[in-house]
Image 1: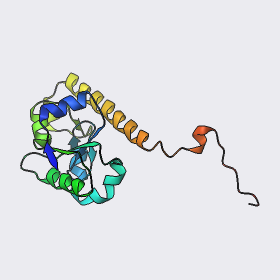
Image 2: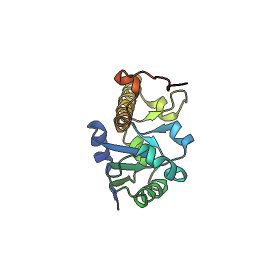
Image 3: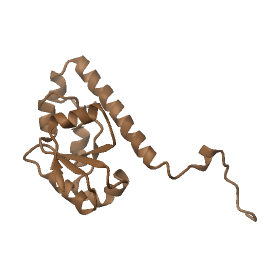
Image 4: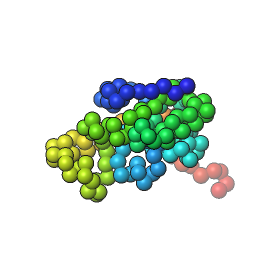
Length: 166
């Protein structure tokens, strides 16, 4: 079952990160132009392939969003995730447009000169970059902790030894 999440609930979750994953359901090109802090890209045509990599535990909370209320990509991805067995899927219906209109920080392509970026004061742009970097680091650390089950032999001081007779 897919439930909805409000903008304020999502903002609070991003400020106090717990175990949840934020998914941008838009195509990669649009994701690269700008996305919410800490969001990972999972377009609807790649859910089957990416879900097990990005979302290893099916009981963790997953929040999916897209461009806005008129966009249905987040709905498609959310229902595909439920069909794959994910039990805690939520959808941010307002999407990226609602988030940006509220003036909340978002990650944008640093090279691109967007109208939104040009209107923001330098201090706000710097805060957005710091928040995006911090949130991305948290996401990377969460992904790393999920993969800690596979121990690298070099991390525990074991060296590769050739097989006898080789």
